[in-house]
Length: 435
Ligand SMILES: [Zn+2]
Image (cartoon, rainbow, N blue to C red; front, side):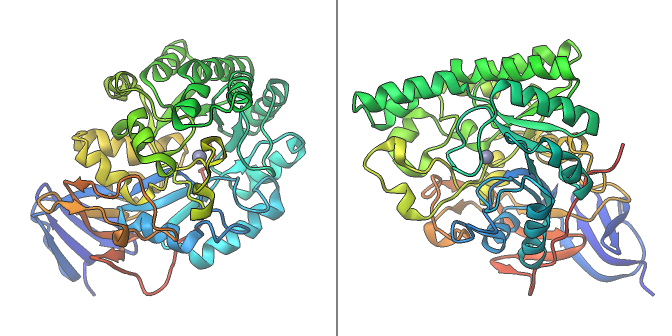
């Protein structure tokens, strides 16, 4: 009998793992192990929990799917993803669609997965069943979602939904951009045949984001619903959230790597591959976002790919909006010189805490042995061939990143090592703990 299944010798501490859990931490751990790894030259991070991916399965697996999406995630040090309710068909808005997606993910996912439920007009009576299924939260769009089978909520619908979510103790996440402002500006630009990248940027101003964030916060205050604003793109948005939280409102926010490392000028330069909503912002907005990072709770990739044809449109408003980024969440943050402590907080510790997934989120005794080994002395050039996505598109192609993910472990087992993956996927459903 060995003391450990796996013993990792690290520069800061040694890590003992048995039965898929961290069981011992300390300097110069003694005891026998079935296998031992010398990671003293590598940085060790807890497995990233990417709470925002669109893998589009079932129904639009040709856009990505759990197999390729989860491989890319694992290759970037991510061990758990929370998959969004739209872009799959049917969208995850009731028990049947949850079970349908869970079945697909179980067979195909190399990483553990939580599933978001949708909050859409007409599914109020399905929310309890979604809670019982174990959704990590409910996602609602305050503006057009870009996908016809996932309608956005008007404010009365959002209010009723958040009231019900509060009763069910479910977290609600919103895509916060004002439908009124964005649809008015979009309509005017299209009517005037102004359909370039800059016209698109102008149709989704910071003001539209701030307006929607404030509305959602007001409803959270009124209903007592736990609120998470996803993909906040600018420092002023984070400031509004921080101010509300200081007043005791239970609201947090997420940002994404692309808002930290790309700007509106990159969108103009790169075009369709860098289209997203909210759009990329000015370098001033980006600086303010960096300055406000301590008020951000989580960072997710908002990985949202599409077939290449949907990125090839004359009119930029017609181009699919979504950036492929789940493979580089952690490496981009390391490269952006965000401290290791801050990265751990934003990509694992806070995510587990906010979503009440207490088996994950830290290298700590009793938690799932999810972690990744990163070589900070091995720069990596992102090439098209190095992408594991179904469609080899990324706005980061051509960049050289400072760190290279060498090996990723899920519950103590290797799921990725130097370009190779586990023989078969063994990802499991992750559900929030009941409070
Ligand atoms: Zn998204």
